[in-house]
Length: 129
Image 1 (cartoon, one colour):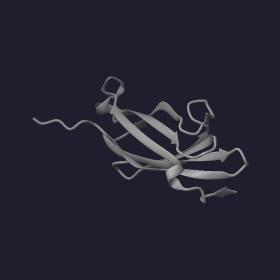
Image 2: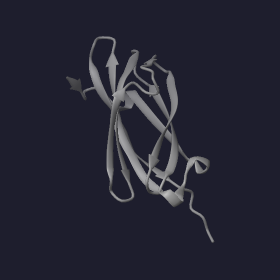
Image 3: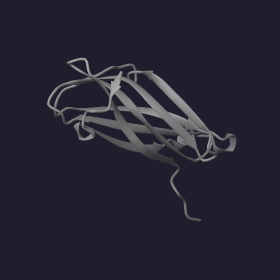
Image 4: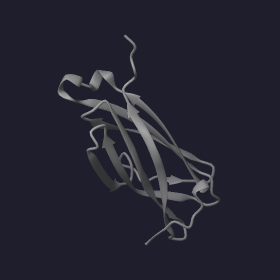
């Protein structure tokens, strides 16, 4: 069972996104984005990232859910005060979309809890003609 009793401020999640123009092909509705996540443990005990759950929504309201063990092939142990960073990507059929989700975390005492990731924007840079 996953508990949500852990204070949200114990895990701080930051996100940076980037549109990858060189990998995208707008004429064929392929838009590639990279995102870098920082997961900071502000608690007093180590936590292990067990799994991820993403909800990816494109500009046509098409929703894709992604669940998996760990992130980028890892299940990192994040010590108090430590920040774990990783970069991954998403491919959309539109130039805009959002991602949101959560990480399942495990404390040393066996307690599992969800660390929510608020929605963030995947967007091509706007151009002015």
